[in-house]
Image (tube, rainbow, N blue to C red; front, side):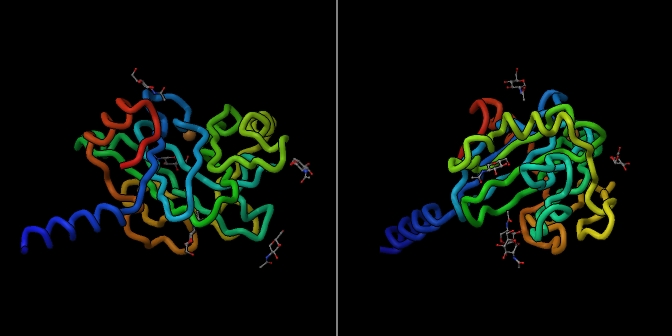
Length: 204
Ligand SMILES: *[C@@H]1O[C@H](CO)[C@@H](O)[C@H](O)[C@H]1NC(C)=O
Ligand SMILES: *[C@@H]1O[C@H](CO)[C@@H](O)[C@H](O)[C@H]1NC(C)=O
Ligand SMILES: *[C@@H]1O[C@H](CO)[C@@H](O)[C@H](O)[C@H]1NC(C)=O
Ligand SMILES: *[C@@H]1O[C@H](CO)[C@@H](O)[C@H](O)[C@H]1NC(C)=O
Ligand SMILES: *[C@@H]1O[C@H](CO)[C@@H](O)[C@H](O)[C@H]1NC(C)=O
Ligand SMILES: [Cu+2]
């Protein structure tokens, strides 16, 4: 009886565990989010794993790809801050940033480092199906003509300033309330291998 109860409890907790998509940031030193197109359901999480360099994942609007979403809408949006990978890499760890998906509205994302956005370091979660011109390809084309703004550097907007202590950065999705568990934590390199082996995104 006790064993049965234990098994059931375990199955129940597995079934209710949150699904987490993994996005590799700058894997192999590339200026990419991989995958750069993801469909995620409300309640699921997306974990960005920062493999190399010193990058961010920052929300923008579709029309202004390299600028904080708060500059061009009434959405606060999220910003990981700069997450340099080297310091953690020496200890076999890697900084991560995790967001929770609340709805199926598109999330247009860019890297706020240097001209990475202009050079195509962008992605979309839940690419719209209702407007054929709002594609990742068109977002990337707009980005190529864009001008990167780091949240906090723009006039009068509510973003955080560029953080240099990436490995300790917290905050899941809102740059204004950086506190939710899971964000900014360090992922073991075993997870990296699993991501690469699976080819891209997968459910943990
Ligand atoms: C990085 O290299 C590995 C091994 O060649 C490959 O599987 C993976 O797709 C590469 N990642 C990116 C983002 O290019
Ligand atoms: C934010 O903007 C959207 C569309 O631009 C609008 O529908 C919504 O009412 C606005 N929300 C607030 C709180 O102003
Ligand atoms: C579709 O998106 C384009 C690009 O942002 C925009 O100019 C256009 O107004 C949108 N069309 C509709 C019907 O919302
Ligand atoms: C990461 O980039 C930011 C913005 O350019 C910079 O302020 C910071 O010093 C960089 N951190 C490291 C460790 O290179
Ligand atoms: C989801 O909702 C939570 C709670 O309101 C919020 O903190 C977070 O920023 C939202 N996620 C996204 C991706 O906007
Ligand atoms: Cu970058």
